[in-house]
Image (cartoon, rainbow, N blue to C red):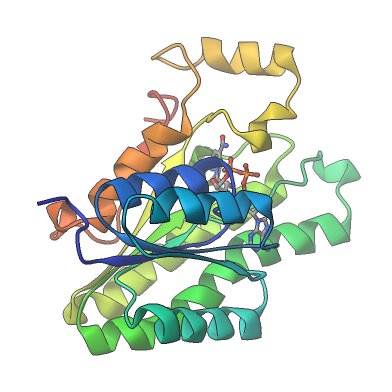
Amino acid sequence: MKLLEGKTALITGASRGIGKEIALKFAAQGANIAFSDLAYDDNAKSLEAEIEALGLKAKGYASDASSFDGGEALINAVMDEFGRIDILVNNAGITRDNLLMRMTEADWDLVIKVNLKSVFNLTKAVQKVMLKQRSGSIINMSSVVGVNGNAGQSNYSASKAGLIGFTKSIAQELGSRNVRCNAIAPGFIETDMTAKLPEDVKKEWIKTIPLRRSGQAEDVANIAIFLASDLSGYVTGQVISVCGGMSM
Ligand code: NAD
């Protein structure tokens, strides 16, 4: 028996990067996969095809996670198509890095809206489904930067720290109905998001990581499988760092 057999997962921001890897790893464990991203493009279509080839159900949705009404519409559409949602991964996220001195109000607002408000939107919309099912696992993608802070990323850090407080509160609100809520705090993971960092910055970061390497999307997806599955049935309100020891 695979770890996620018979379960349906919804993953936001999954056309590439960590979200895509989580979709593929969940499917390899037997889950049907609904996923969203800003556009339903060729990346989304090929992800759908890759999952369907495993004999599972897969559907991509164009949906802006930062829109409150969009979140509600997405949950309703997934319920119409799949009939249940066992796992929600709030993965969509962006950076707009700058020192506070140079950070614009627009860059502050956008990062908070996409990284933090999106998690409120989707969690609020999915809670009625999970409460009715009397089971569910919500996984929020935080960051070591949300735990430790980082110069030049005050907007991103605030959004990812806010998400940790949200995770712990929701774990307390929904725990009695067997709905769990946890966060993952990845360190430096090689994706398009980190590809834009200068090489010298990356080299310096790697020197500070006890395992002396950057992480891969797969490293994060493996922890997501644990939190999504019944293996973590007694785990809620936790933040699990996947960072090669960067944050202790
Ligand atoms: P990525 O940029 O490769 O992928 C992010 C995906 O989210 C993209 O497909 C993008 O289109 C989508 N997205 C952006 N805004 C959206 C919106 N409003 N609605 C729906 N989809 C949206 O990034 P990644 O590295 O795969 O990061 C995934 C998550 O992990 C993010 O929340 C990020 O903050 C977090 N994270 C990443 C790292 C890292 O080192 N890569 C470290 C810590 C945390």
